[in-house]
Every structure is written in C-alpha cells, then in structure tokens.
Image (cartoon, rainbow, N blue to C red; front, side):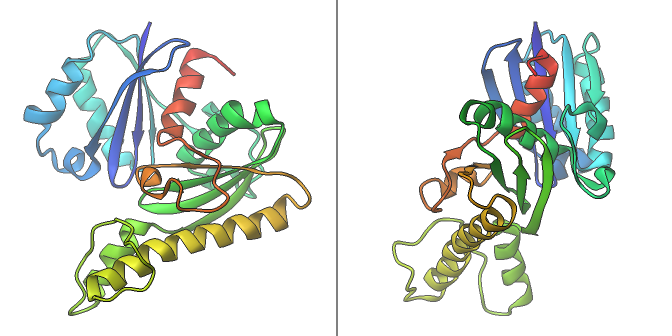
Length: 258
C-alpha cells in the first residue's frame, strides 16, 4: 500500500512517498508561496505528483490553511482514487500538556510523536526536538511520550532576511558557516553573527530547557526541519538530525505503527 505524507510549512511543502511499514521511498519539496499563487503548478508540481503513481491515501499536516485548500484541489486532479485527509491535533496520538492544547501546531505534535517513537522509547530518555524552519522551535517530550510544550524563536533564514530588509547597506547572506567566528568583511561578519549566533542560541536553549524541564535526567536532542542539515555537527548537545520528522510522524499514523 502506497501513502503520501505532506507537510505544509510557511516556506515550503514537503512530500514523502512511502509503503506501509517501510522507509520513505522518496521526498521532495515545493514552495508554499507557489501553491498559494498557483505558480509552476502545471509545469513542475503536477508532473511530480503524477509520477508518484497510484496512492491509497494522502495525509496532510499544515500550518497554512489556504495552502491546504489549494493543494487539496491539485491532489483531487492527480489522485482521485486516494483518500485525502488534513490532520488535526486530535488525530495525533500524543498526550498534550499545553495549557491550551488547540494552540499547538500539528507539525510540532507530529515531530514530537516521531522523535519519541524513534528515539525516546528505545533510550528511555526524554526528548528535546529542535525544528529549524521559518521559525526555530523547541519542544519537550517526556520519556513516557507526553508533549509538555516548548519555545518559539525567529528562524535562522527569517532572521537573515529581516536583517537585510531593515538595514540600508547590509546584504542578505547565504546560510553557510564561515571558517571563523571573527569576520573580516561585512558578509563574513553577517554570516558569523547569523550562523554562530543561531548555534549559540540553540546550545543555550538546550541547556536551559534541560535544567528547567528535565533536571538530573539524560536528554536526547533531535534536530529536524529544512535547515537542520546545515547545523549538523555545529551545535553542541544535538545527538541526531532527522530532516523530515513531521513526515515520519505522519507515516507512523498512516501505517498504524504506534
């Protein structure tokens, strides 16, 4: 049985094709803005979707409702035979300890669910998930798999873009670590501040969350999201990098492996 997992974020839409109880066969991304504006749908997105072949079901997690509506129309053209569903918080089998559970993003719950299933259950340790996308989020999950809450900060790419927008002479930079913290040009200095600053922020948040939420316990830290690979090996305290944790969470639900 073939399934399609879809994660609609503010910046991009991630698609993951998988078989029941097997790893993803393939993943690809498409800009969320193009879904909303209907740009490059006919020449880029539709051919990719058609190439997936017959699907039994499509499960969607979304933080952009309008993009969900548009994508449902597109999928209705390419996969009329598939059962299509947009997941809600109550569809994610995780105990949510947020003060107002409905405020939690479905993507955060799915990533937390996947992190616990993939790492927490095996190690018996609580989890901190760092998601590096349009925003940088931190989520805490107990060793029993309960979602406790977390923190939300400006995303790395969003910060770099905003800096370029609010200054007259500072350019937007490529998100690449410079060789040294000490920058000797404007572009090097900006890259240092953005990249090493983000890494330092993550290290500090890991330390603070660990001390406050899980004192005297060993914690497993998992990074995910579109920018997670850039920071692999650059942030102290991160044990694993899984770029598509949200898709992994959707796959777990679709396959009934919980």
